[in-house]
Structures are given as structure tokens and as C-alpha cells.
Image (tube, helix red, strand yellow):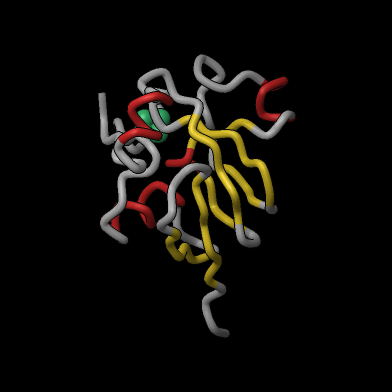
Length: 113
Ligand code: FES
């Protein structure tokens, strides 16, 4: 069976990237050479990669409730390092290191913090 691949778009960023159904969105973004979502631990421990999924279907690996509450998760918040796409996705970064002003001025280059 062929691997399903989906297109991931981050709000405010022109570049899009592909992510397989069994690949984590944050890792696919880095593989594509992009930094449209801030990157931290890559393992669900820091919350830096927190996003809101605005469009699309996905599943999540285990996420710390310190960074994403059950209510937030139900409303579409997730850690990009724990998100596996089930369709094309549109994301909006929410993480604590995300600087919306800088992000817009520099064209979506907001790596780390
Ligand atoms: S990069 Fe640390 S929680 Fe995702």
C-alpha cells in the first residue's frame, strides 16, 4: 500500500510542505528545510511547537497536559511534534516562543526561542 502524503500549510507562511500519514508534522517541516513552527524538544515536553489545527483531520500521540489541556485539545490545539496528518492541514502556531510580529515581518522564520 502506498504511503498517504498530505500538504501542510502554516498560517502566514507561503511555503507548504508534505507530510506522510505516519510522520510527525514538525519533523516533516524540518525535513523540508522550513521553520514555520517553532522547534524545541521534538518530543512533546516543552510546548514550543504548540499549534491550533484550523483545517483538516489528524491524530495525536500522547501530549503533556501541562502544555495542552483536554479542553484545548478538544478545541483543536496540539503539539506539532505529536501530530500525524489524516488529511491536508492548516495550522496556526500558538507556542510560548511564537512571536507573531516577528513572524509576519520576517516571512515565517521563527526557529526556536
Ligand atoms: S517541540 Fe517540544 S513539545 Fe513539540
